[in-house]
Image (cartoon, rainbow, N blue to C red):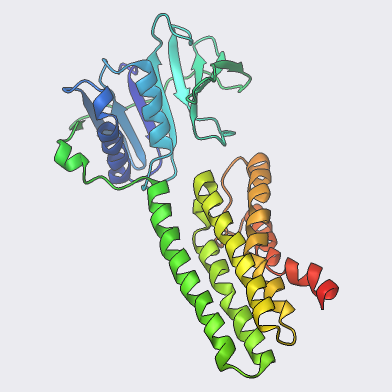
Length: 323
């Protein structure tokens, strides 16, 4: 089988990979030929073969491979490798190329190439960045592909169908955090009115501290969205507002131990200020996104422990100073 214009996907359910391919075709419809077609084959359990249209340009092939590796709103883990002939008069060699995503990639905005001479290159997508030769140690090899029959043929869907596509992760994240902020703001507003209803100052401080856990639970629920800078900044500004509100409550009521409200109100801000550099360090060490789920992996366990304990750092560091 001629492996040029071929992408091999190892991992992921067939239907999920097919959805990702169709999503990319629809998203790229304005840049593709109107009659372009892609064939997708089953090549055994968890192995899928995509034959791209031979008219597809190299850079579009690169974009497709990157998208199949990092699809939007579709979750699967797969190793994606492509094979294509390099075009003339490009920044990359006009040779047979093996295209892939490096195991060390943390940018999610590039592809890597290996030539038949086993030279490795990184092709960034960001504007202003140039292709560079890298020492990946990746050797060119051809896959073993059995006889493929009965492909699913995918093409550009109608505009009406494309308009029904799910929004990007950032758009989903914005909607989610807007809802979370509204719920948190409502819960925190109730704390203010409870100050006039609860005469026992100690009880009120306890209730207020419980109320300030709402933003933290919201941040933990949206943890994966914090990888997007725009969403992180929005949540950071919200955390600053929460801290300011905690200070306002302390000064307004001036109950005994009301300083605890302000100190505890800093927990969401502390959480975010720790999460950002901690995530960067995690990516540098483990070359993947961290998880606070119970994966059992040592790196994730330590990452989660530091994040969870950071909630109490303001109380530990400032409690003795201010009380």
